[in-house]
Image (tube, rainbow, N blue to C red):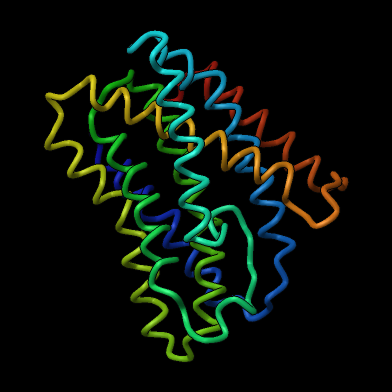
Length: 238
């Protein structure tokens, strides 16, 4: 485990939340474009890097855990209202911010961090996983912050919830690091996370706008995400 992993895993969601709280407009075009970029990066890293390594670690049983993770995210979506992949339905929060949404998002982030803490994979793969989780958590925190603004008028309250949410992935990683001897458990956790990633990335790419069409800027964002992922996998960034 490296300190800069913890820093990035806190910084990405906190920065996303900070941006969501400080930007005065509720227009989400920039969020949609960043989501398209992160979705392309996420699915590329998952297919090119994470899936081959998890099959190498635990064999054909990996498929069952990947499938389990995919459907686990569907359950989490039911409680989180899809905030983690950019769904902002303000009319659902008129009566106040539901605790179940925050708990579902936090559980999702904590599981991602827990899988990172076991050092189950190579350092190059874990570097890519750190960036994949960070890039995914940034727009998720942005969306959470926009929803918080629509519910709470006090900035201190909003920053408290964003800070707490930003700690979930690092907290999961720290706890996972204490259980480092259970390598096989962490390999299965990564397989579950892969399933979560597949659900999130495909949802982002195919439901990123109401018309389900690819605009010019979205296509550029997706292309950049793919190129960055290819570089990360093939150059083994350390």
